[in-house]
Image (cartoon, one colour):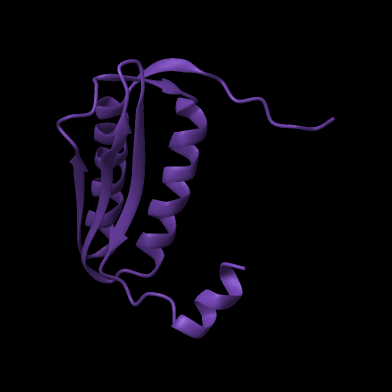
Length: 112
């Protein structure tokens, strides 16, 4: 079958966030008056296990969409600790922007 195989390897979540911040700060500086911000929960371990290439790709897509619709203000990549056990952490990645947003009636069409 054609199922995607996810890699599960240790990766530095702060390095990933820093790299994305740097890439988008340069892009946003060219586009206008938009600041790129990053917020990483200090309780998140330095190394997480997951598929860094896929996470990076997803976050690039989120940030690209935010950049398209944000003419001024900021775009924030936020990484939060949701839960943890003695051997694992669950984190949430969010992209928050000051763009125009999606009308509630259009959100219904997108998120079915």
